[in-house]
Image 1 (cartoon, rainbow, N blue to C red):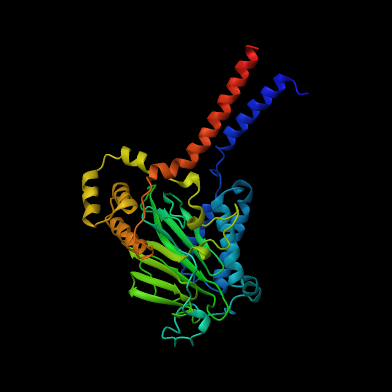
Image 2 (tube, rainbow, N blue to C red):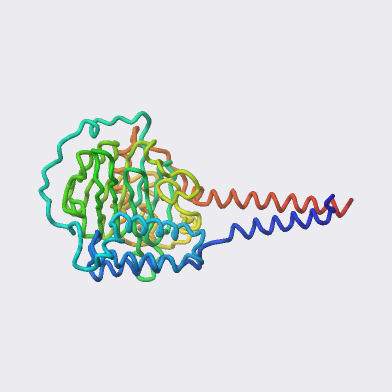
Amino acid sequence: MVPANARYRLLLLLAIVCCCSTQVSGADCKVQLCSRQYARAVDEDRIAQGPNYRYCQLLHAYAECVRATARSCRGDLSYHSVQSLVGQWTRMYDCGKVLEKGPGHNSGTQGGGHRFQKPPRQHQECNGYRPAGSFSHCALFGDPHLRTFYDELQTCSVPGAWPLLDNPHVAVQVTNDPVGKGSQATAITKITVIIRQHGPCAQEKTYEAQPDSLPGVFADGSKWSGPGVRIREEVPGKHIEIHLRYVATRIVIRQSGKYLTFAAKMPSAIATQGAQGDATLELCVRGCPRRERIDFERILDSKSGPKNEAIAACKALNITDFYFDACVFDLLTTGDDSFSAAARDAMIDGGQSLVNGSFSAVPRGLESGGSERATNSVLVLIVGLLMLLMRCHVFR
């Protein structure tokens, strides 16, 4: 039989471990340094993403940098996200063979060509898909603000590269950078969409958007990815849509000011395909990691800026609910008027993607801190029970 004192010591140790475990974070993880070096090399050296020697060489260096951070980043979601994406690109562009052949043997095209591609022959399987259930919507815009496929509404930090969604049909990654030198606010500066091969309806294609570079074609210059997928240029250089008709999916990418916005509508059954288990990293499915979420109400309360002016500016655009909160927050934290336009566009895209055109707003302060408060409540309960047990032992 275990002595009473030993039982109390064991309970005390358990409480301490629980308390400490909630404080573990990836503060020492340096994987974002690798991502910044990769992005800087792509921009400065104008390296085209694709099956070419220069890009595969850079991707190899990126993978080595990520691998070197493995020990300090173990358990860090952004690390596992980047690691997964780099591996995916390496396989997609067959970089092992490209590097083995050496420079001068680049395969594939690097933009240009096929711009006036003839539409592929239609296939019966690729049209008229009608999902049995409802649709789900995901959006990322502004500082950034996230709406998940489960209608969770969050404001996050998430600097660097993050996966938004990853299912058997399409994968999307975003890169967020600070809006100014020394600023804590971030916004989308790059979106990469990978269309996956799927029977006769879709061929594997990559689409990449950056500020002032919102092409109306895939990376190989084509507008189609098989008979079931095409790009529509709604406003040249400002608004494009990728339609995956064979799975009733629509992806919207816009440029607002100096930054990008993202929205996706797809059948609920497809939205979470391949996203089961704790290893799922997609922001659209799991939301932002707790440590990346921002206490929206606390920051607004601490701001001494012209709140009335920000509120008036957002009301003038007829923005409501979550998007109104996001608009006011962004104007106060960045001072950039283009963020209010981003909130308006996100609301338009969200409204088009809903069955009834509206949804109930969730107070961000409650949503962003709910998990932490639930965890803290459990810990308080454990400590309270421990103290009660100790008092009973003392007065026995």
